[in-house]
Amino acid sequence: MAPSAAVAHQPHHATHATKEEAPVSTGTLDVDPLTEPEDEGKADQIAQAAVTQLNTAFSSGDANQVAALFRHDGWYKEFLALQWDHRAKQGPQAIASFFKDEIKLSRDHTIKNITLEPGSAALLPDAFPDIPWVMAFIRFETKVGSGRGVLRLAEESNGEWKLHALFLGLETLKGYEPKELDKRPQGVEHGEHRGGLNWAQRRERKKEFLDEEPQVVIIGAGQAGLMLAYRLGLLDVPTVIIDKNERVGDNWRKRYASLVLHDPVQYDHFPGLPFPPHWPVYTPKDKLANWMEMYSEVMELNCWMSSELTSTKYDEASRTWTLKVRRGDGKERTIHPKHCVLATGHSGQMNRPTFKGEEKFQGPVVHSSQYTSGDLYKGSKAIVVGSNNSGQDLSVNLVEHGWDVTQVQRSETYFMSTDSVTGILMKGLFSDPGPKTEDADLIFNSMPNPLHIPSQIVVAKKIADFDRKTLDGLTKAGFKCGMGVDDAGFLMSYFKRGGGYYLGTAAEDFIIDGRIKMKQGQAVDHFTEDGIVFADGQEIKADLVVLATGYQNMKTSAVAIFGAEGEKIKPVWGLDEEGELNTVWRESGHPGLWVQAGNLALNRDMSKRLALNLKARLLGLA
Image 1 (cartoon, one colour):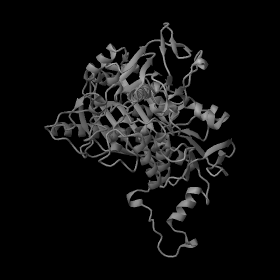
Image 2 (spheres, one colour; image 1 turned 30 degrees about the horizontal axis):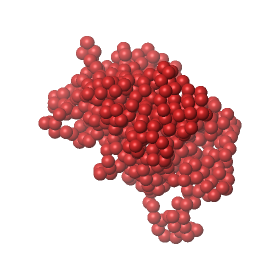
Image 3 (cartoon, one colour; image 1 turned 180 degrees about the vertical axis):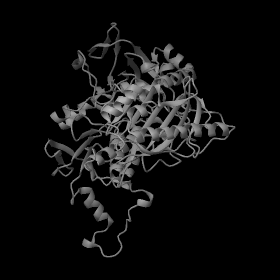
């Protein structure tokens, strides 16, 4: 599901709504994306002055001079701008120490040639609670490449505008700009063809790596693996994806029959190949699976399907992996990449609790990952343990197949309707009309995550007011609704917990009208032959039990695939002390082993960041 729109702004070179249209919600507060001409001119002047100050400070190589441009509570955030990591620091003192002690800022190792993107500056009077902002896009250069950034400026009591947040993100490496537009490959080889191979034959040799070794191996052909492989291909990094499924897209295709994405299409575009205009707002899982399969072919991604790793070994001296891969035909292939990327989903192995007396139960007990459809099971009464997205979807599916369903909810769940998703959370950022997808990604991902919290508290309250009738109905039916982690709704629940929410598709109506019964706040005590007894002593009869109990940390998948090597990686997901996501797209704790994970939108942008990081390391820049 989509993270919050955070602070949306359509650059003035983007498509605008008309003056008569209602203000566009930014996911925080309603902000009209069209400022008055005098405000637009003022915003441009303020942003340009900040750019001039930044150029002067960075060119001096003086960390203190750079830090002095920030408010007392200001943030600096970067993705690979001056070091090969994702970092964030708050306050002038911490920012100065970071540039001085970690970055080793100097006149040579610094940010250069900062320019304001024309038409991007805007005055946002309500963008952040109680703090008007001027926001603008910038471009910059470093010794190794170029990038884009975002200024968020706030006015001090003395009238001076200072940085509330500055983001800098590397976008390209010098000499290795992506093959796009003017850098298209020729394609057809006219004239004499050495060896007489046509495109299809050359493509097959490349896919099978008959003439070279892959430098990067990606485990998992889901959205994370495909998007990263596409980005690496643009950088001429030989890459292969290994997946045990028969077809690309099977990670979605084989899930429960009623599954539909909970985030809108504007949020889910694939890099290089956005969905067409007629694509539905919410994508059915089989439609997405087919798109992914098509994407892998069109983008010429090297996917070894029906394949799995049988042996992994890392040599510290050569910094090289030795991987043995069993292919679909049973033959084994040994390859020697420099880097492996785990892209099997941001969750790990299924979280499959066991219960006292479970062996006595006469019916099936299945984890949600093993469930496909209610018509495959016999009986009339079902218990679903878990009340987040999958638990709700499976409960609805069971009811639709004639089952009497009781859902078990241990603690509170954050609920928001799909109308809130499109009408509040996403509107003005990942919506139509809205900024270009790459600009929307930049706006969202440039925000230091702790800065999201105050604005998301406002968003959560706004959504709760919008959904009040449904929330009251759920509460009356025995479903416990909460406001999410930090009372910040969806976003912090997603980043900090990776769960704890339900984005309404149908189950809320089933719960309110009693078609899904609730058992709230009681743990399972033990199973009987024909049901479950809860901690309060109540027994509920069942012929089928579905455990929508989620998944373990992604590290468990690393251990399952890489053994002792996988044990060395740090826990995946959740926020570190700087507010950045742990381990994903960053050094994992094991050299040459990386993690690419998350929803479609995060993978779309962060695949670019990780691809640059891997290319830099292959070039010896990092």
